[in-house]
Length: 301
Length: 301
Image (tube, rainbow over all chains, first blue to last red):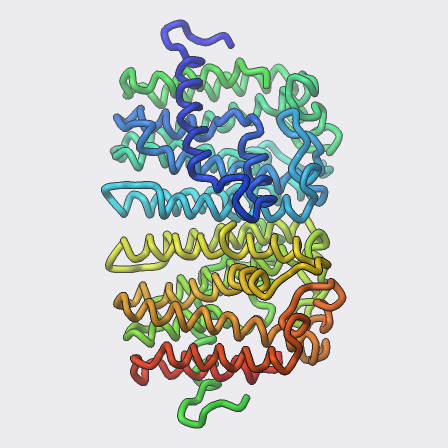
C-alpha cells in the first residue's frame, strides 16, 4: 500500500478494524447458541475477511468532527451487517450466482440457499436491532435521523433499487453514463455515504460539516466504483478473491466499457481530488478520511 | 363470521382496515416510480388480500389503552411490511416453494426469484424507514423500545430463527410439544406479540397493561397457530387461498399431528380463554381485542 508518508493509514486501519471486529463479535449471537446453523451462517459471512470499508469510514468521519470511534461502534457494525446481508443475497443463484466471495465459498455454497436467504434476513434485522438498542446518543433526534438515513440508503431508493436497475440494464446497449452513475450511486454509493454521515451526525457534526462530508462521500463512492470496475478487467481471481472478468461475463455496464480504461482512471482521480477539496476546512483529525481517499485509487483488491 | 352480538367486529375491522390500507398506500412508493418493477412487486404482495391481522391487533391494542388507531398507523403498516417480506421469502423455491398465496400466484411466480428476493428486502428496509421516519411519539424512549421490540421479534431470536428451526425439524420424529411451541412462538408469535405491544407502548400503556397484553398476545399466538394447523388438515385450497395439506406434504410437525384434532381444538379454546382472562382489568375499549380472540377459533381461512 503506497500511502502519504505523513499519515500511517495501515496502522490506523489495523487498530480501528480490531475495535470493529471485537464489537461485531459482541453484537452478533454466539455460533453455538440455538439456532446454531443460523448464527453460524451469519458469522461465516460477517467474518469472511471483509475490508470493513464502511465501518472504517463511519469511525473516521466521527473522529473528523471531534468524536471517537468507540462511541459509534454500534452504528458502524450495523452498517457492516447490512452490507454483509446484501452480499449474501446478491451472490444467490437467482441473482449474481457467485460461488466465491473474498476467496471463500459464498454463503449458499456452504449452507444452502434457504439458510443463506434467512441468514441475510437475520443480519438485516439485527442491524436495526443494534441501531435502536445499542447505539447511544445524547440527542434522540440525531439517532432517529441516522436510522432513517441508513434505512433509506439500503432500501428501494438506495441499495436494493440500484441492484434492481443493475439487473435491468444487463445486456442492454442503451445504457448511458448518467444511468450508470445513478445505478452506482444507489447500489454502493448510498450506504457508503450513510456510513460517513452516520458517524458524523452521531458525533455532533455541524450542518456545514455534514454538507462537506456528503460531497466527500459522493466522490469517494464514484472513485471506489470506478476502481472496482477497472480491477474486474485488469486483476485476477487470486488477487480479487472473487472471479475477475465477471462483469464482462454478465455483460454488465461498467466504466471501462463506457469510457475505456484510461479515461476511467482519470475520472477516478478527479473524483478523489474533489473529495479531498471537500475536506479543506477540516483539521488534522480528518487525516484518516484524506488517506482513505488517496488509498482508493491505489488499491489492488 | 359468528361473533359476540355486543360488539360488531366485522364493522370495526372493515373501518380500521380501510385506514390501514390507505396508510400502506401512502407509505409505499408508487408503482410507476422507478425502479417500477421493484415497486410493483412490493405492492403486489402488500395488497394481495392479506387479512391485516397484525396491524389490526396493533391499532386495537392502542385503543384498548386509550390511544387512537390514527396515531399508530405507521407502526401498524411497518409490521405488515415485515410480515409481507417474510411471506415472500418463505414462499421462495429454496424455502417452502409455494406457488399460491391468498389465492394468487406468489411473488417469485409473477416476478421471478431475483425480484422476489429484492422486493422482500426492500419491504424489510422500508418498515424500519417508516418506524424511524414516520411514526411520531412524544417520548423518544418509547419509540426506540418499539423499534427494538419489532427488530428482535423478526430477527434471529424471533421470526427468522423460528423459520430456521421449522425447516430443521421437518421430517424429524423427535419433535416434542415444547419444541413445536417454541418454533411457533418465534416464527409467528413474536411478531404478533410485537404488534400488540407496539400499539400499546406508543399509546402510553402502563407497565401492568403491557404485562396483561403480553399474556394476551402469547395466548392469541398459540390459538392462531393451532387453528392454522387444523385448517391445513380440514379445509380446502379454495377456502384457504393456498394449498391445503401442505404441512402433511412437507411432513411438518403440527398440533393435529402431535395431539390429534380434538385435543388441538381444546388447546386452542383454552388459549383463547386465558387470553380473555388477561384482559379482565381492561374496560370496554378492549372489546375489539376480546372479539378478535373469540374470532380466531371460529375462522375458516
